[in-house]
Image 1 (tube, one colour):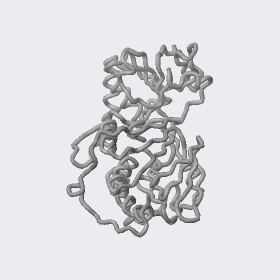
Image 2: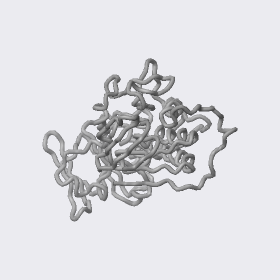
Image 3: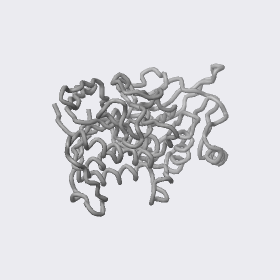
Image 4: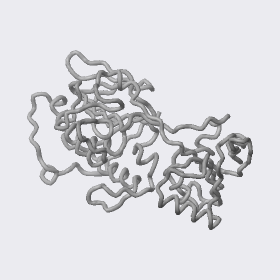
Length: 344
């Protein structure tokens, strides 16, 4: 049984900033996330794409944002429990909660901050035989490091922004890029779609349309080809070292919806002044939190994380007055502490 002050559910940017805000108030934190990496959608979906609406940063990538947040929270010794979902919640008679994850990790905490975005999410997997044999070696759903695909023969499947953006970005370093989509029209922005067609006309990208994925070819987890076919049954075998499948994400709040926390579908209603839900001691911030006229922006989630941490203080230190201080007055503990990762 792990005893700590605050359990934070979600290791995306808002969850990471919640660690910082709790740390500034001398509250200990552990963080649980269903993904096996820190960073949430920023790390999983657009680590190398620029973000333009983070204050004081005209532009920074998702990866840079997560690295900066990790450096910011390092002084507070957070422990991350990755690759697992929170499941069972028990209210303790004298206040606080016991929480158990899908991997059997148990926590006893005084407050909970849910920063789970749209909930635990994972990729929508194509219905291909033997898919599991190639996942992580020849089939990928995210790009976390472009260099991994240098000199590779790539097949990219999908017609949205992720597929088109990565086809363009990887065309500079890959041996070849073939984009498979079931129709000639792409759902990406007009600018990037136009750039995709420019690269196709220049011979740097091949558009394989209208086709859809049909099979994987290879041996012992090493991918050598991707079979595709049209609705009329015409088949092709594309030589490939890697398949990047971008069919979006499936997400849900899972067992969290059984905790008695109320709110519109897929969200939890909070008091925007405190971040607290209808269940005392449970807070929500980021995209999972809802209230009238809510703006789903990262910076909004940052503010909600701060509100949640300040209200959670009353549960962690009951009866103790909180004297608010700006960081310019209070300072931050010396940096250099290690962030502990616990990957299931």
